Amino acid sequence: MAVTLKYHPLAFMLGLFKPQTQLNGHVAANAWGRQVLPVPPGQYHVHVHVPYLLPPQLGPADLTVDVYPGQTVELEYRAPMVAFTKGALGAPPQKYPGMPVMIVLMVIMLIFLICICGGVIAGALSDSSSSSLPAFDAVRQVAGALLR
Image 1 (cartoon, one colour):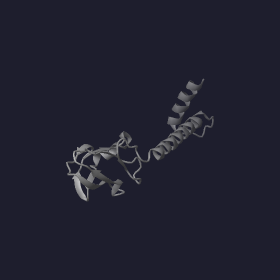
Image 2: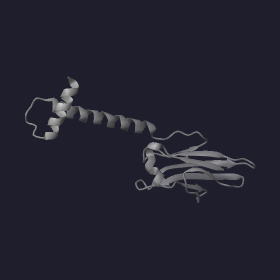
Image 3: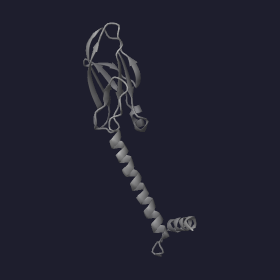
Image 4: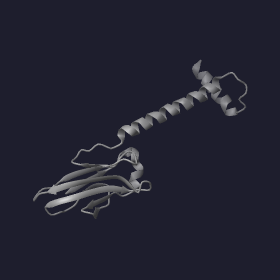
């Protein structure tokens, strides 16, 4: 049996934690990447999770696998993009769980950043003399020069 354990590059902090692969309740592997687990033919319960801070088990995933004589079963585990969702475990390729949620969160953050930048530029371009911060004067001059 071979299990490939992956995390998305945007979830790079997961590289600090070692995933735990269990076969029938016994720890079998503790590393990212492809792990070959020599097992005799039979039925196995595979459990994978990443020990984490909160929640204590990030991305738990379970699968029952039948291994036949002379067969190598290829499995792939993908850690979730959002901490409180389950991981994906099965025949490759697997998708990253929580990707739509992560995209929505990134779009919201981008909109928030655009609003903040727009507010700073609008405040710098306003003709009110109530601004006593020298930084706003510099931003007003630069923004005014760019927009002329």
